[in-house]
Image (tube, rainbow, N blue to C red; front, side, top):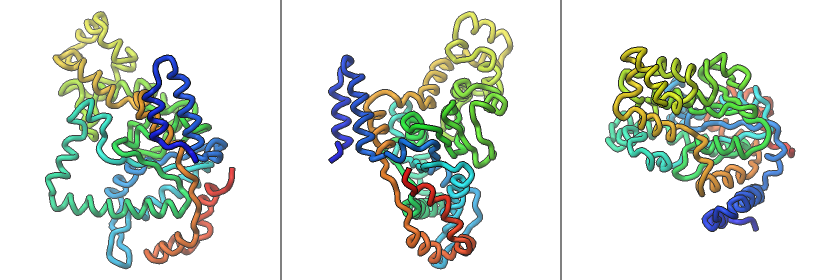
Length: 356
């Protein structure tokens, strides 16, 4: 039998500074045994789908579509089209859909206000918002079930955000990784082995085109966002009136938040005018440093949580394509456009079920 994640966690807890390297090796080795990931190790390209990002984007974008029972299915239909097109376009050896699960504990411990308004809105029980939420969640479960029939791997860990799982997966899995997400947090992960495809902008960000597309390096992009804040995650900028344009200008010139707060640089930047001086207003430096900790996906690399994520990301079992189950669901929902070329439609998923 393979060791449980509890055993892996205990190993990490017992590890002192002296044997930390041995513990990390144990976690890596045991995680791979737990995985049975011979196929994943041999994969040259892994597709990483940001599941929650896709689900909510499709919920806002897709026109209403109902099945024979009158229940909404537009998100399911849109998600299947997205993942099928992604597999067909990028021809990966493996695909992994990553999901959020529970409250974002790692970040709420740093900042209790992180996504607090979003959670509050759910608790307010606004009838219209409630209907939208339940409409999406009902399709969420169908998507997960259908993906399992299609042989697509999935992963979630309670209280860990998909962003962090994707970050650790990028470092754990061998070969090239392509992330499919419109979440700008993902762009900091671009490297020699990681690219990010935005389904909204239809752009594949890589080390080759990142500077041209964004005007900054991936690390600088993260630092710029830490200064400007992120409204979607309810992370405020360093000061009211200090926005992305100014942040980008300064990071492009000075390189990092740390450099911007050097006394000599502070004097130079402040002299540019009131808009720039906002960077040095009361509490701005502390906010910038906190934002960087909230947004930096590499920080998950330390501690027991990282060990659990590594083990889980490596430990996702190979799925098996169940053509009959997929065909049955398509017929039930009358996905006629998919049924008309069903054998051809399934071909990209058959690649994922092939022994590597």
